[in-house]
Every structure is written in structure tokens, then in C-alpha cells.
Image (cartoon, rainbow, N blue to C red; front, side, top):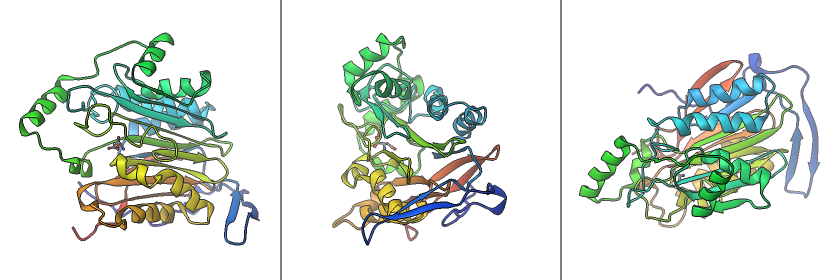
Length: 333
Ligand code: ASP
């Protein structure tokens, strides 16, 4: 695969700038913390996603560009990958747990700070749709397991067998070897995390996954946990994670990225700092797992950073997709 260096502080080119939008105000909540509230300077709408998912970002951008809602864009963008059985990390066709069960996690968060998620849900392809419904139509933020599945059926979604022949075959091969290697996440496509800014400059985000391949039964990762797998603050920006969920949860990663942006860091700097929090932990085993973050701020600047190579961000803007290879921490291995 040809790799391109990710543009540090991936600011937008002059061509990508919309005229007239500038820094609106700078308010200091305390002497150290600068709260920067801006209007977007980027060409909008803008969609970014983890990994190389051009069909998903194109779908989302098209909806936004036609005046659709940002939640419709995110949901339908994620649904593209959930329905694609060749993508073995989300939705139908996802790799199962050790017992052969495909269990899905997903969440969504809107510009008003509302959110919904599903965890450990079986037999329903479009976990992102259920997460959105939890946010919009229930008094709760999270539904788990059988409750999430039953809720999905109650709103008209159909039960399906999510274990495809391809994923079943790989699982059976893994059973023979029985060696749990989360290092697999260094090279494989993973969670789809998607962040979008609509034409009004409002930000929302979504995340959907089948989680770590061959995880223990009952395991839930970062992806459905608001603050870990995804966080949106419409005044500041948003971030979403992929990779070893346990490490993201331990550092409340996506919330951290957004808080670092609140303190004045660019999306790129914030992603780098959040990755360094993981690798600099005492006795960190970072050489054996991957974590990647992508982020966008209110101005439409974007960033991506991971522990190891083989992480990329898809960006759809101005009617075209770009897959941007992420810069990464572990350049010596
Ligand atoms: N973050 C996901 C999880 O830990 C999986 C991944 O992105 O590979 O469940």
C-alpha cells in the first residue's frame, strides 16, 4: 500500500476556505483555560471517518450537501459499512467473539450533547440506527444485550444471522490456533467512527463496531461509551476512536481529545497528546496494540494520529473523498 504522510495540523487550503467566517469570540473561563468559540472556516459540509471508507463518507456528505440532517448523514453513512459483509469489523459479517457470536456496539451524539448507544447487541445489522432511536425515542442513553435487540425488533428492525461464512471460517481457524492476538488491530480495518459538520457549522458524531475479534463473551469496548469511543461538544469539536478499546476507556480518550482542543490545541495536536497518554503510561504494552483517533474542531480543521502505522482517515469535502494516511507514534518498530 502506498503511504502518504499525514499533513500535520491538517489545516485547510486556501481553496477550502469559505469567505467571511472568522474567529467570533475568545472567552476565558479561568486564567489557564481558553475557551475558543469560532464559526467554521472550512468549506462545509465536511465528513471525516476512521479508516478507508469512501462509500460511507460519500453517502454522508451527499445527504448533508442536499440539505439533509447531520444525524441522517451519519446514520446512513455508517449503515453503508454495517451492511457490507466484506467489512468484517462492523455490522453484518463482523468477526465474532470466542464463542462464535457477533455482538455489536454503537453510539451517536448530536450537537446538543444528547446521545444514545447500544452494547453487546446480537442479530441486528444496523446498530447505529438502534443507537439513534435510543437517543431520540427513549428516556435512556444506553441499552444492552437482549434489551437492545428486543427494542430494535419493537421498532420494526429484523433479526438476522450476522455471522457470515467468511467470518465463521476465520473464527474456526482461530479456534484451532487459540491464540488471542489483539495485535490484529494494527493492520485490519476496525470500528467506523464518523464525524460531520453540516452547512450550519453544527457538529455530530457516530461510531459502530463489532468490537475486537474473538473477544471474551460479554466484552464491550470503547465504541458505545460516550467520552471514550466518541465525544462531541458543538462549541469545540468532536473526536472518535478506533483500536484497542480497553486502552481508550482507561484514558477516556475522545473526551480527552475534545478537552485538549478546548484548551487551545489543534485537532492534530490533541490526537497526538491523547495517544501519548496511552503510550506513556507506566508499563504500557503499546507495541502490541493499536489505537487511533480522528478529530475535527469548530473551524473545520481535522487531525488523525495513531500508535502504529496503518491507520488512515477518510475525508469528504468539496465533493470529493481523500484518504489520508495518519502520522503515528511508533515509527521505530
Ligand atoms: N474500538 C473497538 C473495540 O475495542 C474495536 C476496534 O476499533 O478495533 O471494541
